[in-house]
Length: 84
Image (tube, rainbow, N blue to C red):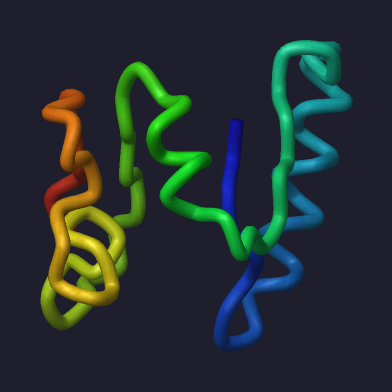
């Protein structure tokens, strides 16, 4: 499951992801959820959160939550990439 929408001109990358999913034949295993107003419900449905961005962000808003709350108040494991 991928939640979110492209930011700052990343639309081409989103198209690449959709194409890659098609090339690999895993359309039935990958769910592009797009922008979600109910993000906390989405997060609660995850077993694990993987934030694979290699672009640094100021304060880990995806992992910590944009409003300062932890991404997983229910103590689910969270993994993030280290910027290159």
